[in-house]
Image (tube, rainbow, N blue to C red; front, side):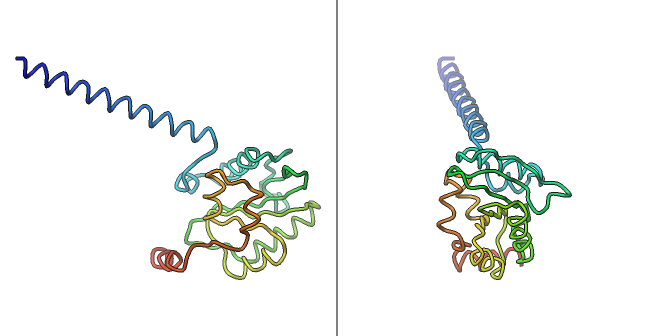
Length: 186
């Protein structure tokens, strides 16, 4: 009987520990979501509008002002408009594609047109995937900040949008990463 009571007490302590740890983990995940942190898998599952709202939240977190979502069927090539913390105006195009689809250069060219149309100082292209080599070259040559999947992960993890301009045109995975991606997605 004593052994059974000790066993039941041990089980109760173990079960209580599991419940508390589970609740703590859930609370931490909810806090991370409130703070704007999402896993890339969660970002991939978003709708286009949710992704645009997610980008708006990241911009606001970084101190951008007058940030608003303008995306829609007649958005003139812009999904988000606002001002960077230093006061420069910005236009953002958001594309939520699967990781196997790449952003073609024509879409980056459209953003350059939107930058002119909205008279923005800075154009930012945010994608859940990667850019084709010509698209990435076009972006860097024309001063468009190309935020690909790797940079989106950094931005989501706390890097600021202005800090991503310093790594523009770089970091689309290592050679081995690109090779694995080709083998996985074809």
